[in-house]
Image (cartoon, rainbow, N blue to C red; front, side):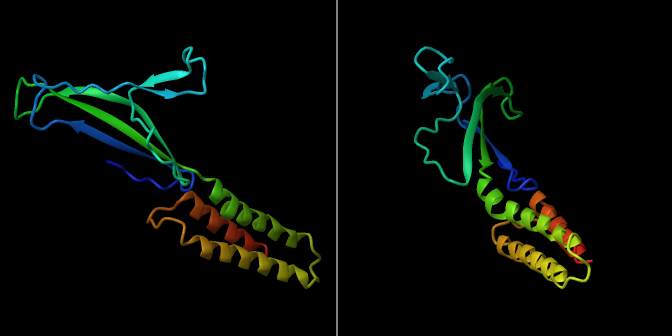
Length: 181
């Protein structure tokens, strides 16, 4: 199961849990043990040949995607007993897969421009009161922030909860409006 939590979007990490077990054979006829596999490790301190052994999920055939970094934690084995079958052991394996969003695109294309525009809007306090450029600069900054909010609305996930990015957008828009005053 995966409980999607996007409150920290775009700095979020999702965790998915998979519980594998047999439904027709108990522990007398089968055993579930995670398979150890070797994967190349850059850290030569693991052992002499640069190999590290793990019992998580083998991602050697996985094709990397640009939006997420996928990782796995070691598998956990357990033996459970169910009410239907007292005295029988039922082995199972639990896997945990994580998806960590790569946030650099969002930082570079949405967060930094909106933050730089907000800081620019505070230049209106430096300009003389009688200057006609003061209101023009404040309105331009406010419109830039509004346009970034509009363009990013297609990328931001829809949720009833407030995300960090949504709070940042609203706060920076309010600062731009305040700079007009």
